[in-house]
Picture 1 (tube, rainbow, N blue to C red):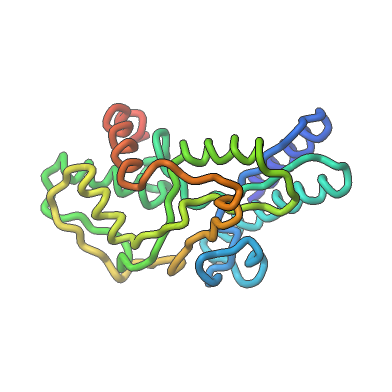
Picture 2 (cartoon, rainbow, N blue to C red; picture 1 turned 180 degrees about the vertical axis):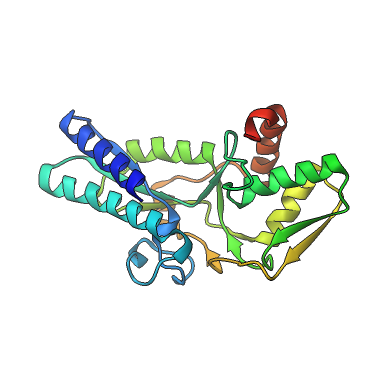
Amino acid sequence: MRDNLLIQDNVIDAAHRSGVGKFVFLGSSCIYPKFAPQPIKEEYLLTGPLEATNEWYAVAKIAGLKMCQAYRIEFGFNAISLMPTNLYGPGDNFNLFSAHVLPALIRRCHEAKERGDQHLTVWGTGTPRREFLHVDDLADAVVFALENYDSDQFINVGCGEDITIRELAELVRSAVGYNGHLIFDSTKPDGTPRKLLDVSRISALGWRPRITLKMGIERTYAWYRENVAEARL
């Protein structure tokens, strides 16, 4: 929490003091309440409790977008805020102790394939639903927003579609070419039941993602294979 607050507050303030013409702050979909109605609209912010496992990070992100709004009101600083959904792609964090679900599944399936394991255990029931956006699509959305969006109201960025963790694991298994069975350990936590962003605002402006999840996973796995020594650090 401290690191995120210090980094974003210093960067936002320095951008204002340095006369930056337009500033983009990237938040996270974890800013929304754990049990927010689905799909999640921007106006659901601060309407309920956060997911307990990452509330400190979420509070820092909320503070960042509020700081952008405050600097726009007080100083006329042209800052906009984007709230991306779960991101993945080349250069992701594949560390098994800290990686998010998609890169962790890629690494675990790859290593299970290398070892010839007959099965792979996945945490949880596999029923929670998640939305994923390739980092190249987010980069495209940032440029699009810089050129086409100017408001103090933050805006969601996602693909508008979600899948179950079980379906995600099967997609990864197929991309990796792992032929073992997936076993879901229901004694492990599932986390938030569903997290799908309402992307109607950015869609109305004319932006759409271009990379399908299947294509994105295949590209990410290709990067992982070429950079496996670095990715395993």
